[in-house]
Length: 390
Image (cartoon, rainbow, N blue to C red; front, side, top):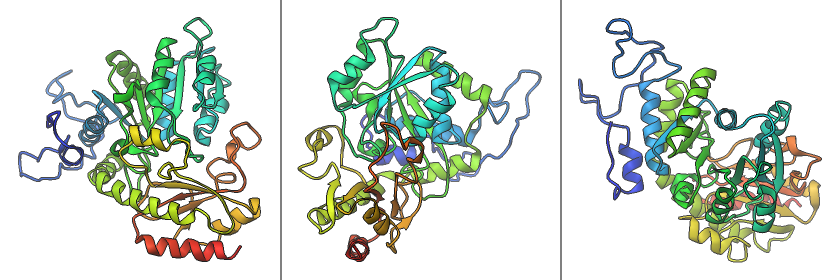
């Protein structure tokens, strides 16, 4: 395993962290380890610490070293999905009666996990507008018995593309003795490193930009705190929601090109967002790269680029949004995001259907674009023909 110097650039770390060549043959790509168990040199005589696949696997370890290097943390854990990672984190940190403060436009799956799976277990939740720092402070508390146990932030948020000051919310959370968690899925570690801004834990659905090719499901947690890492590691081992060797291998392969992909995603999304502004039938374009976006200046400070996600609201309401979502040809109507191909999503009935009827409900006139790395002119032409049908 390799140790990268602090001055090593992002793309260098992405390619080399955890990826030392195989010493026996010199293979520059570490071999894929499928074994579920490992021979021992006598009882308790483990070779390099490997015993059983649920606990450790060399391919997964390589990915975890890679993830830690890119997020700037000491510990990384690779899970079978993003929600499995979130579940392990909450179970490691919370007990019945604890409260989680999260954004009022959080990902629907996160809210469903916290409210409908962990809620009956006694975990409380309180949604709040994370862009309103005074509202966040009031919801989190001042450090007493009633203060929140976890503050959970997405920035940019899904799908309303709100930008929140990570460092400011970190201060609020830490003043109250809360653990501050940032879901960095939309930005990826190439665009944003929340640990450097005060986050305690970074969450990823590695299915998205990190994997990058819509062919693997996974999740990750990255953090610095040794004690917290011990608790998370125990839950992961005891429950067993680990990423399999092939999933870890595919995620590692995708992660090596994250930097160049995010540059292209960001370039394309910027062009598309600018083209959408003022189009007939378009009510608003939600993209932090636009100068009139409320979070534009903040995003420019805490992000490297503005990312590949664009949300659009239509003046014709629900019917117009549905019409556009079902009329594209290059943009595929599908769940998920972050792959090299462009996807169109109607969140109200798809990714965020679980929050319908709550304060987290997504506007029915909104579609979400995951802008891929195709030629931007072709993507714009596809959107043009779909919107023209209105």
